[in-house]
Amino acid sequence: MMIELIKKLDPTGQFDVLKNSYLQIEAALKNDYAIDLDVSGIKNIVISGLGGSAIAGDVFSLWAKDELKVPLFVNRNYGVPGFTSKETLVILSSYSGETEETLSAYAAAGEIGALRVCLTTGGTLKALADTDGVPAINMMPGFQPRYALYTSFFTILNLFSKLGLAEKDGQLLDRIVDRIKLKGEQLSEPGNIAYEIATQVNGKLPIIYSAAGVTDSIGTRFKGQFNENGKTHAFHNVLPEMNHNEIIGWETYGAIKESFFVFEVLDETIHPQIKKRFEVVNEILAKLNVPVMKIQSSLETYQERLWDMIYYVDWITYYRAIVWGKDPVEINYIHLLKDRLKK
Image 1: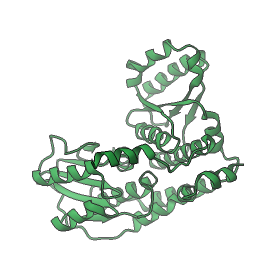
Image 2: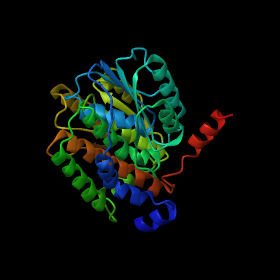
Image 3: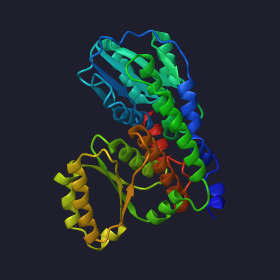
Image 4: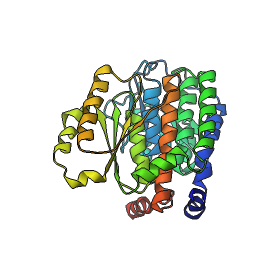
């Protein structure tokens, strides 16, 4: 049943793209190039991008949170933040090279005189960078931008390693590649757990809770993939902040509460008080008979667990489209919006 639905609903073969995500990682890490950029005097870093490019920045901020010596800000907007200066490293990431917000940020950073590096597969961003003598790092082409998270993130990691801003641990990365490859084989088999979860959440509204500074970027990815892949609204909030506002919303639902399905994205490194907060939230949800599913990994290191969970939720949301009877690639309203903005 699953295979037949995939053949019918996924004509462009995103199933195989997702299964082979490990190839993106390998290609990004093997991308060898020379970059002549003195970052010894930078005081902050901006990663400017939208969608999957921004998520790559979010995930990197978690990956390197104990390693970076200067603040890192992910910019999802036109222009650049007000603190941007000549002592700012601005990384402009656009998979297509045509993201208008990122092109705006490129121009604004140039006017300020910030250090710029572009990550792209081509397009206007690559052309501008070549004209201006700005380093432009090529990413593996041929994917839908949201499916290119793996090439986007590991291109960032490779860049930071070359600039001496972060370490690239070969053994750790080999383990991540092996895990993604193995999990891709497991989660592409009929009757796999990700497909079963997608079946359970079908027809329900996903609500995702994550932990600040530990799993919040995974929650953001999960929500966005439910939107784009699964063709459904989804909501995401972060503890402890959720406990200061959204928790009250659970007081007012009647029969509509049966429409909700809660996911909790957890990790062993979550602050003890946040773990207690999750316990209280779960008591409330249990009284309301709202289903709760925990997304967690048992791998050895935080970085391995991070990618283990990201890959898992990518599969869940892919299958959400399939059981919903939708093509996971189709994003008609985004195309409509872009066309209207050009007029």
